[in-house]
Amino acid sequence: MMAFVAAPPPPPPPPPPPPPPAAAEAAPPPVLDVNPNAAPIVAPEQIVEETGFDINRVQGVEGGVAGGVVAGIVGGLPTAPPPPPPPPEPVRVGGNISPPTKIRDVPPVYPPVAQQARVQGVVILEAVIGPTGAVTDVKVLRSVPLLDEAAITAVRQWQYTPTLLNGVPVPVIMTVTVNFQLS
Image 1 (cartoon, rainbow, N blue to C red):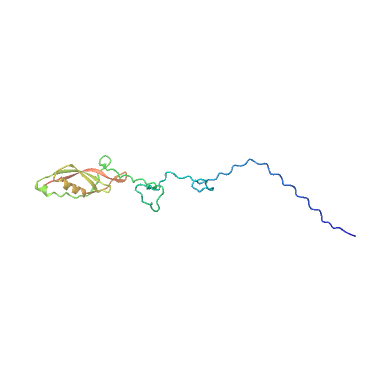
Image 2 (tube, rainbow, N blue to C red; image 1 turned 90 degrees about the vertical axis):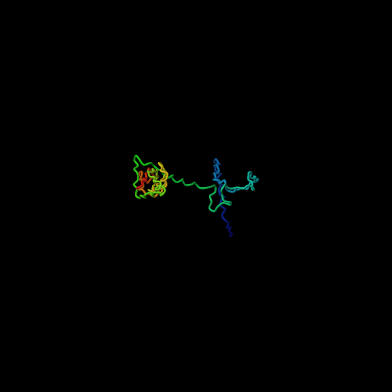
């Protein structure tokens, strides 16, 4: 007896792959954020020569430092802080502003020349009292020639209480009289 042993038949081939889906409408390529200062990805074929750049011309800003400064700001200065408010203008005594109280009185020194000439009288001055109460400026309104300087020197040494306007010390202008009388 003879027997043939045969191998089983090979399996059938796999079915063909399904056809590709119908080409859908192609989506536009995504837009990339391109930095204009970045180097190009593709090398340009021609390099355009720059114009208007003169290497021999001195550059910089007027009043600047040659070569720049460490930690300097490109393009200039940062915004400057606002200027400080102007000091308040002196106000005249009168109306709602009462005269300040004198807390230090320095009597005038009678000039020897005026004593010999027997000069006496009243010198009227306009004094500006600062916010601290110190006399900052003096002008003569009515003069007695030999006595003016002594009156101004004395008034400049006087001290007053600060004058407040809305709770804030302000400079004031007031009229001051200095009497010179021989005894």
